[in-house]
Length: 152
Image (tube, rainbow, N blue to C red; front, top):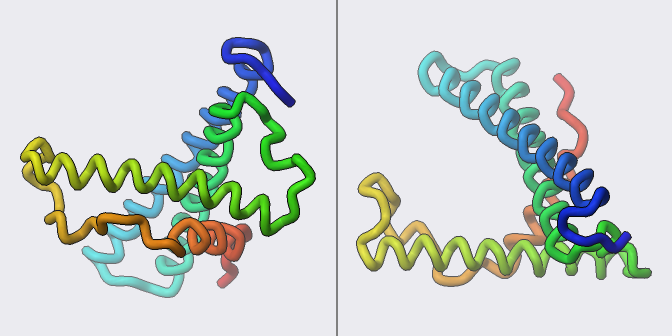
């Protein structure tokens, strides 16, 4: 459905995007807390299970947030429902993700090179010049493989 920024559909879409973002943040925070416990006190089977599920939720909600942001940018909630096959739809999402990850990598590398990055920033060697070609595909595959939490 086509919409304009500020109309009812856009406002509803922004509510959904906010929900995805908050779920993403909560899942990341849960993973962060569990990982900290594992480092400080040692890992257990139950802790490992909980970390895996928290990380899976994080990836799932991050991916959905990105797809929602793409739809808002296009001002069309049905951007991937244009008669595309599953493979074409996946490539559509992957191209969008790769472009934005490349933008982030370039900005990070530039900040390191021009000295405006924070002092705690990783070395530039941690950031490749180009997004690995398989990154977005693997991100989508991981999200799809882990759509359901793992069982003990």
